[in-house]
Length: 358
Ligand SMILES: NC(=O)c1ccc[n+]([C@@H]2O[C@H](COP(=O)([O-])OP(=O)(O)OC[C@H]3O[C@@H](n4cnc5c(N)ncnc54)[C@H](O)[C@@H]3O)[C@@H](O)[C@H]2O)c1
Ligand SMILES: O=C(O)C[C@H](O)C(=O)O
Image 1: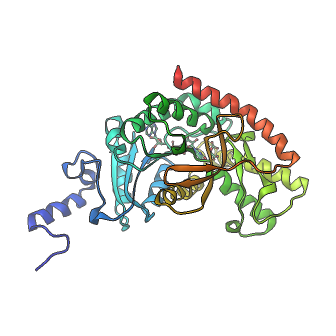
Image 2: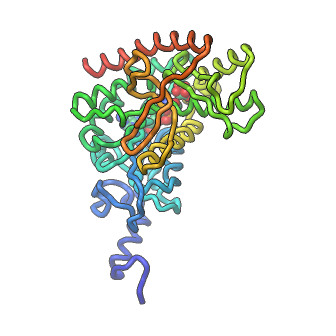
Image 3: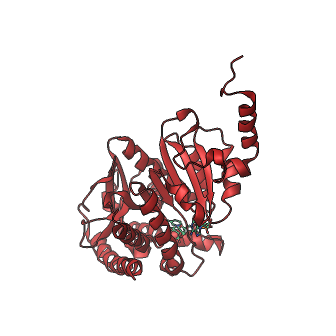
């Protein structure tokens, strides 16, 4: 009788036992799964995605949600700790995405080879009283090393950088790619989607709307005053009193701190961030697939202002960022905010560039 899956009995048993022993089967090192140019079982079409920092507070829910994304055929989970358990757990979800785990620096190259999209939430989060810039000393080195791996193993991958301080880590990544000769500014995106997600939520609360109907462009960067919501450009068009504008701008700029304080030492936003990261990664994959009109905000290499990096609305396509939209008309309040944002951004960008070149 013909059996599903094919092969003789011993092959089938080997296959099943590999599944029953996830510590072996799902981890790099098993000869059956060792090839990092792995293909989905059954040849399901889709993209290959790696998550670096996959066992962390963001990494775990992000990995779970990416396993549910039908655009993803292969999902590589990399971390320096606990990848084994997370991979085993997520691999039991009955979606078609194939999941493989990679643990520690010696497996980074295999985790990255052949990837179309690399999402990076690796690094330490804030505790109350800290700024994102206080994370620089630890996270800058982590991002640099991971980007060196990307330059070597998947130089054409789209990179979604989440690790803070994003205003500096994206310039670090750019310098690493320049040094390696692989830099393509269209493929490097700092993830600021959580600012947009928060802005949509808070604005919808004030207006009494469904957040899914609200679209607030958030430009600039991803820290404090560099987070610049353009409430004058909100869809659907609405006007705000000056009190509402001040309240909303402050709440959006301090949304991260609000969560850090509520978690009281147990980290920063993880669940809303995973949601935002998946929303953004899905947009990148739809762009790669060739979908039209995929537009999101992201912190990207840019000439929209005199700064070399700036978060803007971008159109995503087969090569990553296909178009960066100009700021559009801003009101007086936003113009003043823009000047403050640019000043802080300039320093954060320079800090990242200097670190990468020292
Ligand atoms: N861009 C944003 O909007 C945004 C939002 C929330 C958090 N963040 C940032 O994301 C980062 C991660 O936050 P978290 O809450 O998941 O932290 P976490 O500590 O829970 O998880 C971080 C993970 O990174 C791993 N890691 C550390 N060094 C690594 C390395 N060299 N290679 C691979 N993995 C490594 C850790 O083992 C851990 O599993 C922080 O820097 C945080 O500030 C950014
Ligand atoms: O606030 C943080 O430190 C994490 C993240 O940048 C956020 O905006 O939630």
